[in-house]
Length: 132
Image (spheres, one colour):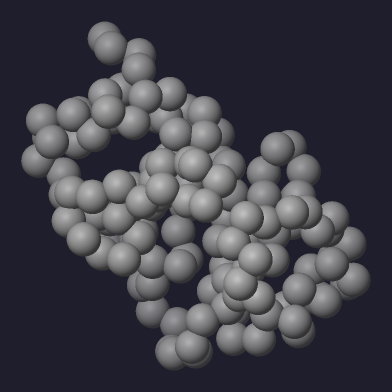
């Protein structure tokens, strides 16, 4: 078995879609006592927290809509080699896309981490990145 294709069995972050970033940030920081940490976007739409065990909570503000399956709400797993992982997805005919939704493309975050997004059989979004 090619171990570089296997996803790491650890959650790196949980992203939560919020309607008002300041209100939600105050709740997670002040009520739940999560430690706010640096985030790379610096756009006023993101707050990141350290929630322990090397897992982060990312609050992301966007124009509010009724909560349905939404790419902003996703699980994230890290892989040691993105090229090998993508090759394996193609072998299994699993479609992926970048953050804006362009098929077979990779997003590179402002901090250099590569990301792809795909849906599980029920349509839930899962991010895979190379922050291994």
